[in-house]
Image 1 (cartoon, rainbow, N blue to C red):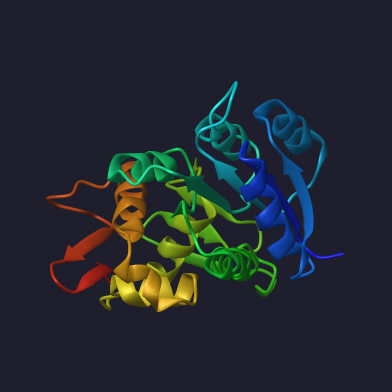
Image 2 (image 1 turned 60 degrees about the horizontal axis):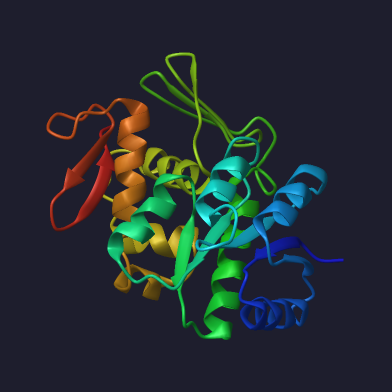
Length: 231
């Protein structure tokens, strides 16, 4: 059996189509048309990724996303018919790792699912060496346990935030462009041309690090180039 993926969408034709494409990739699918059924699944099943429609009867996909993030770190991709930037940013704000707007090409969705699972395995300690730690100026990241501490205070980071912070720390002193971050995390450079996901995740990281935008201690913006953490 492959990785376990949750699909939640009240549009049955879309949910069934996504299920078919992902089953063809040997993933194990848990498919639901209502939020209540999905929430029950989240409570009883160890999942590897969730695909959540934003507009659902009873409770929104955003509420489900928040429920997952309260307990789990696996990737979440939001599915939405809304093309407004505010809806995409809202999804990222509550803990989603990526979003895809309807109508979408099924093969693109499959590619994004694969990219998120690759990143999750790589940066959640599955391939990390035992005892692998990243340390910088009061910031401690345990790659194996996916834990992050700032001055001994635990930080709650999404998988993508953890991956971005790790890459910046491991390239301390060097500028890392948004395109490089996309390529290292998702493995698909074209994503950087279609949304501002990295910008939103950087903003969330700064908030959690209490990092001032004008005089940052950790993440510095190099305008027109990218981001870096000073050595």
